[in-house]
Image (tube, rainbow, N blue to C red; front, side):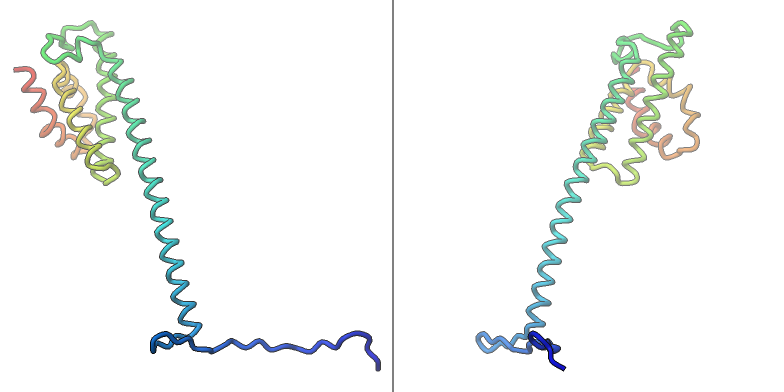
Length: 180
């Protein structure tokens, strides 16, 4: 039988076991490959960590902005006089419609505060954000009708005892101070 063209023969590839020497240290190609792979994995891990930190920071900013917008909207639902510490604004002296509207705003506010407390307790907030929010809550607690609103609405938070304790220990003392 006559074949036209070159005859193909199977080729066996062999891995080189050559050793590289430098100042008396012998390193095989396998060892070099392992070191290079480990360096590549470490660089990849650092890149992933940097990316995740960026995402985490962006999420924190988004949470802060979202909660700040909610806070501003809630405060717009509370009359100016009711937001001025030291004023004689009292819910008990207001018409039913206004009293209900202000209590609704405070319900939203207490919900916001309870969510912020939950985020803090579950380590979803950094310390500086929580610190700013607590100081702001203490300022709001000085509003003349804060104590009245909590007296009416506090029972709605019986399922979240940590929040009720936080209000009693951290916010109500500021409300009492403001009323004296």
